[in-house]
Image (cartoon, rainbow, N blue to C red; front, side):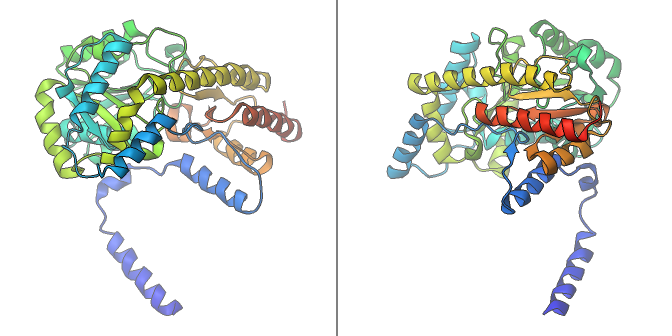
Length: 405
């Protein structure tokens, strides 16, 4: 039996050598590697506090669960249109009007299998071989990999705390070249929890527009903004492409439901791609998602948002008290991007040591771009206040034992 297995694996290895060359441009997701290490420690009986993966500890609100139950009982499980249920698209449009004061034609809204599918569709429609897309360094790693999946090239522009870890119009102007086709922004951002100020975002859009490029804005954390009036990039013009999701504010991560708002001329091309690549988003998730916009559900989500803000207001000064530096107060999402220089000059090794010795998962800057890879760590506060307090106690003990000031 071992010999047979060896032969099969050898044959498989030979076959895998023919994989598409674009895979060389897609790096492993180190956040998930740490999660696997943590899972192994838990199997050994260790108690681990997870502050790594960006997933709300809240699950779908009860009205959403009830709606899913009714949809199953009523047999509403057939394919929908590739663009999504008309009533869900209308509910999303009404939400933009109510919360952001932006009127959006429901026909411009395409319901997708999560924000990942929305980004995939946008890149499939807009990114050609060797096309360059500008994005900030640091930024969510999968965004640059969506570009690479269509043989484009993400140009990562170092964006430090003086720029809130975000691109500026000046950076876009200075880095635009003949191969550049557009920008991919995220506001609020993963990993930093920082937003692009509305006036600066307007300048970026105007700069890109003057070059006849595209602007994609990832707004999946936009419902979780704490320190400013609600704002969506959709207010900057119908040519701005916006991505959103039911995963973060609406706490529906595993339901895989999101949406994409596109210019009118992109609706048909995106629909054609969606028909071929996905057929449609989960019909069950779509019927459940309708309940997210009910007043009862929205009241629950606003209470949960307030709890996330309470956690942020605890964890940021707590981390600073431990010697981390938080150069920009996160104004959204549920992340803190912290300078760990006072602890170590190797954030990657530091996070492994903290996991093994303190039983706390935080992740290094390695995933998010080279400019902050060794100096920063991302801390997620998408866990209970009790866990946050225990994690701070463990980190304090770890530092006293293992880190020289």
